[in-house]
Amino acid sequence: MKFFKNLFSKPYKTTLTVTSNSGFHLRPIAVFVSKAKSFDCVIKASFKHQTVDTKSVNALLALNLDKGDSFTLIAKGSSAKEALNVLSKTFHTLMQNDEPIKHIQKKEHHYLGACLYGESIYEGIAIAPLFTHEQTEHYEEIKTTFIEAITYATNDLEKLYSTDKNNENTMIYMAQKELLASLAKEEGTFENFEQRIYKEIEALEGGKLESKRVDYLDILQRVKSYLGYSTNLSFPKEAFILIAKDLLPSDILALENTQVAGVILKESTLTSHTAILLRAAGIPSLILTQDISKYPHTRVILDTYSGLLLISPSEADFQEAKTIQKQYQNQISKAYEKRFEKAYTKKGKYIKVSANISDLRSAEIAKKEGADGIGLFRTEFLFKEQKPDFQLQVDTYRKIFDLFPSTTVRTLDVGGDKSLPYIQLPHEHNPFLGIRGIRLFQTHPKLIKEQLLAILTAANGKKIKIMFPMISCVSEFIEIKKIAQTLAKENNINISHISFGIMIEVPSTLFLLESFNKEVDFYSIGTNDLTQYLFAIERTHTTLTTNPLSPAVFHALDFIMHHTTKPVSICGELASNKQAIPKLLDLGLETLSVSPKHIAQTKEEIRDV
Ligand code: PEP
Ligand code: MG
Image 1 (cartoon, rainbow, N blue to C red):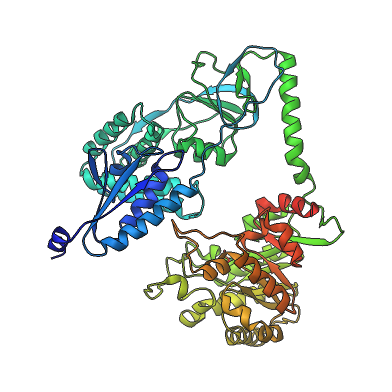
Image 2 (image 1 turned 90 degrees about the vertical axis):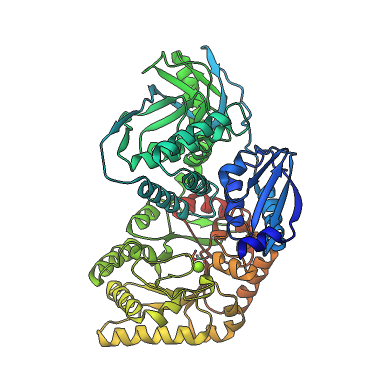
């Protein structure tokens, strides 16, 4: 029926023009395709003499749409009109948000030796021997079928993408996942799949999207790894500069755990996903087309501030490189060196910079990074793979509470985008508005009670704060606090040193502050969720975005600061936003809780206000 409906209904058309300097490339295409797939109707894209299915990444990529190219979107069937509307909006947002890759301006230099010049991917200086990357492949017969290998590879990519869905870098894995889906659907056997990948790569040759060849190779390697093919990746134990023709995006993840000081690629491009991940990993890297394979193990200087490689540096050149390296490091480390010092504004006001952590390891990192305390302990991460038993919970909480004079521990915040494999939540049309955070108490009271008791037991005289997530009305808080008090009484635990508070992240709480003031001991503003609910845009949405610096957010914060009579801190991402920090301090916030890696920089920003 649907088929006939689609066949005879009137087609809707619209024209879209590529405005991004980078063209319509893999990452935006992947987002576009996933949006197109949410519609039942047939949606085609027509450009020059080709018409392709918009639900296939591979087909859209093949159009090679560049900046200035206009193509027609044609939808037919039920919801065709709506699909075109949504896809046009999605497309415009994608074009607007597609930041061009900045070319690094080469700095002048004073080296005496002969230099080879290239294009810098990421700035820095590396002094180390060259090491040539040669990969060998081994095969061992295993019983996995092609379909299973595709499923495993898809799951891998899904996992990599889910770690941080709003991050441009993890979007790469979403794009690879869509690419894999479109190829696997068309090719039923591994042999066909492999041949197809090489055919696609051949077609990319010389074109604007040639840099995407690494993504095809990456998904091929991922699938092969489940079919018994393993590649040997061994790197020196001492610092090294890696030379390779090109690397796969997944190689960069492996490289991050080595002593790599720099990377030189012969055939990469600034826009490739390998380059994007090198930047994200902060590895000084250069694209150099000259052949340098005849200089293995030579100690060289890679200076990507000036976009060069010195194959035979003199002693004076080494000195020069070290001086430049020091100068840059000094700038970065100035903030880092002062990370254990308290942060005072120019007017002398102390601002506490705490850390957002998820387990013991991140708490230890926070300690090393100079956190003044723990402002948000997201306990759900301890429960991620399997439920920790009561004793394990007590031990972990205790170790973390012992690290800092003050810890704010949040009870399980599951639901929405955070699920637990062993917890069955009812199917919901809109999980972000469903059983989430404290609402889990309705469906899984035993789990929450056990966690509360573990926290109370671990506190054992320590001054900690217990915080409840997703509170939307006062009675929820009163009820859960009562549960905690009863548990303490039944187990003879003194809780006079424990304070109880809430996350302010559901807009309704703003208008109930007068009542909350009478009940809670403290508040912490979760701007991630508060922004999502203020704008009614899912925080994990792939195409709709909110502006974290919107006046709507700051009006809400201002309102909170004017209507609360108990201490307020902020623990959403906004707390480490360079542009937001002066405004947050201006509003009167005195505690910012940020991810451990942002502590030193946040303190430095505060000192500048
Ligand atoms: C928030 O919502 O801002 C917050 C800090 O909590 P989470 O990101 O864990 O939901
Ligand atoms: Mg939240």
